Length: 186
Image 1: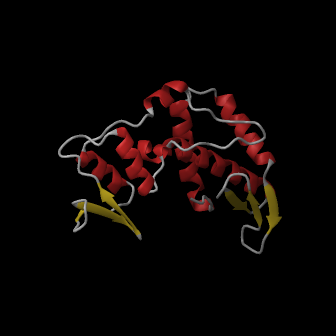
Image 2: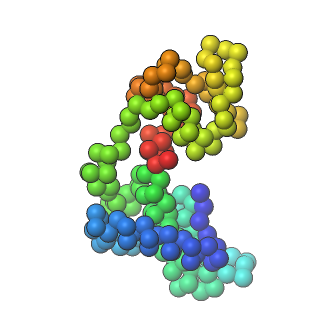
């Protein structure tokens, strides 16, 4: 996902501040500040032909870029984009890559809760739909149902009214191209 534009800057900054405030009791806010400073030190800037001619990006953070009328405005916008990028990754439960040795670590109590568990068939279907899959369709194959997302089709196991166990769920997620972190964040 790419973040940019002055119009979305305020929304991104508000989201970042809400997320950062909600985690402040769990994380050392200095860690965020140091990470953002490290990311900004990796930023590259150039002048482009645009009403906001200063363009900056952080190549080590995929999709993080901003523009501004001045270099300082561009840098401030880029800082807001980094904050929003961090907030989104935390919200989605995605890893945040280290920058110059700086990391944002998820507290161990959050990691302990973030384990796969068995789920009912209905719960699995509901969560697959949250990941963009269409409703279950009847199948003429060995499994009675399948789901689709774009060109991707996956068969749904039917454990005869029992919960889908962790091992079987892992196989379904692998076929569905959904990571553990993505599944747990839904």
